[in-house]
Amino acid sequence: AQTVTQSQPEMSVQEAETVTLSCTYDTSENNYYLFWYKQPPSRQMILVIRQEAYKQQNATENRFSVNFQKAAKSFSLKISDSQLGDTAMYFCAFMKHDMGAQKLVFGQGTRLTINP
Amino acid sequence: DGGITQSPKYLFRKEGQNVTLSCEQNLNHDAMYWYRQDPGQGLRLIYYSQIVNDFQKGDIAEGYSVSREKKESFPLTVTSAQKNPTAFYLCASNMVWTEGYTFGSGTRLTVV
Image 1 (cartoon, chains in turn yellow, purple):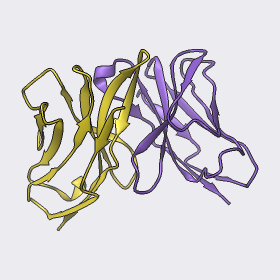
Image 2 (cartoon, helix red, strand yellow):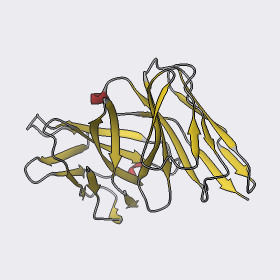
Image 3 (spheres, chains in turn red, orange):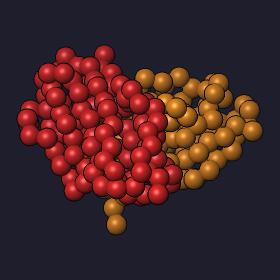
Image 4 (cartoon, one colour):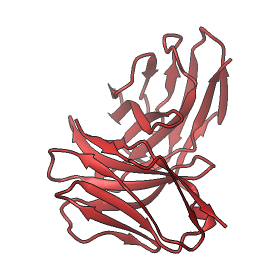
């Protein structure tokens, strides 16, 4: 069974600093997708970034980038120049095919606080 | 604007009652999903549906039921058999697996 592990339940940094959130996953599949979702206090789930497993190049979206290490099954999220609005729960997720369906499997989340 | 609408935002249930959470999407997505979120835990899959009139159990389906009579709608019923229903419930949909999910804004269910 696929699992996703986020080893940092909580993190806190000062505004403008860079922060890295860790995520590891376990799968025997070769083709899959990985995602980071953000859940601010409003509790709306927002897609931050996605990574295709067959692409070696790390995905980047403005201040957000990932470090994808396929052999190590690691998928960390780096937030540069952090802003107060980045305060949220962050979930790492793995998309798998199962019986023809596409299911997202989530980690337990990391609560990130950006301090002024 | 296209999106997913969940209602109500807050719901209170008495012991022994069934309640139904609504999820409607106008994105023309084929697949829809229900997740449960508890404090300190990630999202866990309850049920999913890939096409109209078909749905499958997820990891924690006991005490829940769903229907998919229309492509746009995927309501979730929390039955009295669900022993610990207090949680935040999220509905999602997608068309292509490479794009991840689009989520609704959630329903907070509390047993009183």
